[in-house]
Length: 392
Image (cartoon, rainbow, N blue to C red; front, side, top):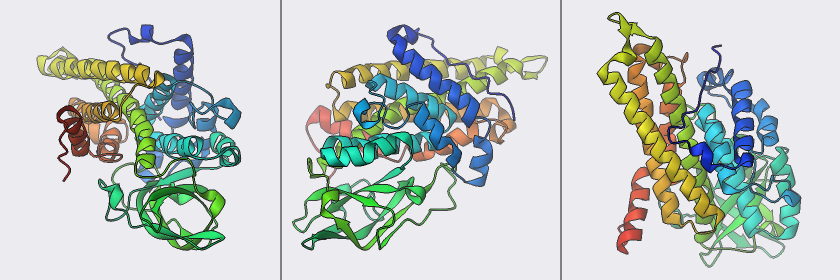
């Protein structure tokens, strides 16, 4: 296995905008990725298998619910720290970052924000430590960009709820211990329910034959007359705004994470361009390759500043959903373009597992679609600036 020689680009001295705690958290995550993820991730991606042994390490670096208060097992960090952790993990692999951000923003976040104290104390410490792994059930086979059209539903049966329906494209589903599931009650109102593995009628078949996020476990959630205890209903928020609030947190993490993937592709291409000699000189000495590399570092720098400013707004409680959509859309688009350009710099070597670029490129094809597609986020911005909805 080739050593991980990654050096993070910081063309505008953005480190000076970070606190000592931010840098400590980021550097710990970076060292862990170099030690525990980089040496194994190509093999696991080729096998289309999630490396379960890294779960404990993810918990130890605070990747599960980093902003969750310490009283519930979280690290009590701020939003920029959360973003930096996601950046470093996705520098290793988008699928590993998916596992972490689902656990944090789509499972722990709704239990913390929408749950009661009993639910927080029961689930959050075990999720923070990695003893429990979670997943988030929103997307359905026929309802992706329009989650409000969901058909998964539950009925009040007196001493329990009866849950029926199905969810699709669910990260962590095959091994999740708990699922935060969004379903409609008999009045058509959307609520969150905590469903536990082992409940009769609850199954999680795995999705195979993926060309993207191959080192991430993806599956379905099937509910066939599942009896859910009434105390498992999240009581403090309902309606479509509840799951969308979770997606805000997850999309924010993606905006940072995509920078990590882009940085890894850029760093790999820059090093290769300096070392690869053709026509008696390094290809990095040619105008065409310098154009590619200069444009890459420019776009990465812009994305870094966008994410940092969004983090400041998140810390202040001022970031809007539309601002988060803009950052998610921009930064993932930036990353996928950089991956494609970096692959060209490496020529034929760029498609091999000896380098990370092709794996990042394939992963980003999922990231640009999930948690709001590229086009949907554009319409969210359009709605925000014009006041007119183009969704219908």
